Image (cartoon, rainbow, N blue to C red):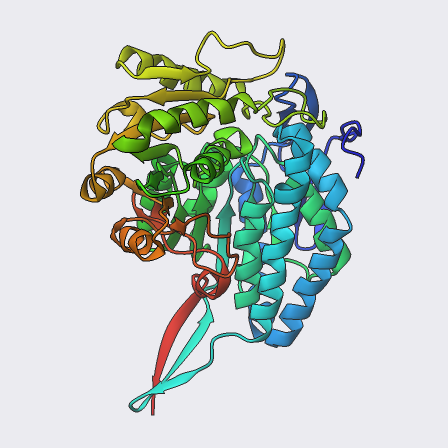
Length: 480
């Protein structure tokens, strides 16, 4: 791909995808889609309504018996065709994400377009070999698809988060109604172009764009939706869980994070800092698993701060289509302001500014926030406790391993984390003590087959791999 290529010419998308066809919405209202790097409008999509949700859920309900009865190997074949159709659009997907989200094109190509293909490939394999039935005493235990799934996805990874829900749901035999984020809906339309090419049966997957309070709420409360799978903020997840609980429906929630990166005294400090800064700033910090708290042993603290400042200085803000850009804008003006408010509060709370901050130079247009680092952050302060969701890193000293674990666990979240040590067994011992769903030891590589999800207010349930597929099943015991 030519990384200097211009943004795609994005056309307005005027339809929903229901029962295998592009159909007119029930309302003429639309949602504009903004390029956050420039502030310009680059497209628009329909503003879905509860009536549109009703149509889509009815189509999914009608398609469910046939799809659930489809042989696993045939469901796998459909997912394989979808993988091929998405792979053919990888360049267009990357350029679209770079335009509607602002992710630098190189990262959009590798992660925003590449990672969903990797996840989808794992689901092709898992769909062909679902969990085997087994016997417990005189009972045959089987897994069956849960039914119709309402998938509500966020803007920060607009294809990956969709595939992480839709692919395992389809592999398990469920049908789906998708509501993508209204900030980044154009990428979802590319997915449905691929779904059309892949020839999935009508009604198996349906698309209703719109806002959370309208379309998202209608999906969460719909009596014919058997499971709601949501990724987003803890506050919104709480609302969705409440709506689903009114009708005793299942939910799968992947919510916020405030992940700790624990750097022990004997760690390879330059590597730990370089990888830690990269993780914290990934996607301009708009990543739920970002290691936004760097915990460093007091004996290495000053050295670590120097390394952090040097690493952050290498992150150039700018046009997502410029190959020199390493950090794009935040997704919206509102998101950028929220991050700036966190920075201002950290300064007021007495944290020491190491890099960036409110006076750092920014591009002349767009929703940019400079990569910002604070030292001497109190573990109980707002910066150490609240999810910022922007390029802001808090560096916190600790005296010994017990204090490091206590600080790491001093959070209402528990989604991800990291530990660094020359002694892998010591690092593993710390990882076991951390109350979080995933921990990387010495930069362990991402595993798309491993279960992904959180403890505490980071959510309920798991995504990815066999665990993610099981999330979309019910367990039945048949006595004989």
